[in-house]
Image (tube, rainbow, N blue to C red):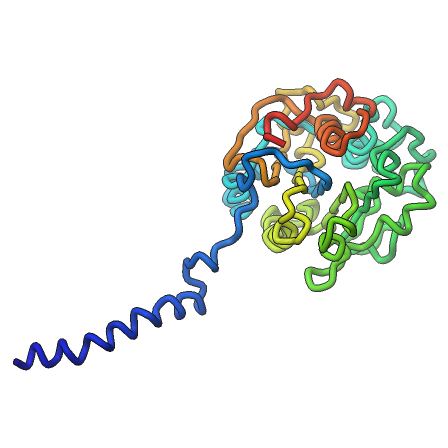
Length: 327
């Protein structure tokens, strides 16, 4: 009789506890549906009409330093969820010429005056070729530079490096640069996140440059991995990304070592020419791996295809990433 009496008393308590458990799990970060991160990729079978492209530029690490590296757990979780180009190449060494090639399609031969990573005010002259920014003069572009003291700033300061800010170098952008090349800000108050509040405020192309620590240039890989863990979810949870018309590319400007002026775009043997390229978009299939040989010229062509622009320079003959990643 005592056993039955205890069971009768315990039954209501157990039922009550069962109802409390999910709420406790939610408070403490348990694995509930509401607590799991929203999927960034594979959410659309049909390819949407892409209206916005975001390029996040990281620094100075070859493919093997990032892919499957324990130093980059967040980035590798993004690779597992989204897309990875397994044979993507920078154009040359060092940094600046890669930024200029990616945004203008200029060949290495035309970029030789910039192979010394010269500041904008010290170079032999501005780049006079056409560029992706000029192509989007009417539809809109913006660069978001972390730690830049003032808009369109040509001078190095702290962890801000003008050589990683390509818009400063093109002669046709002097008038528009102060309005379109701005400081990134903080997660709590960011010009990028403000732009991503609506399709009307978001430009067609957004170039995002972390500072010298957060882009892995002067700090370990883990610093950049942590930065992306903060910023990428803010981007993919934005109103504009949720409208399914935005593609995000995370690429590294160049790999480690190599030599100044090296021809890297089709170099499949030198690991200093082999860098990661991660593709995040609603129609990218989760875990997609594409082995086609791509380069910064390919990314430029991909941006131009998505935004329905004519190909510039080296982009004309480069492989597009559109089909491989279902964009």
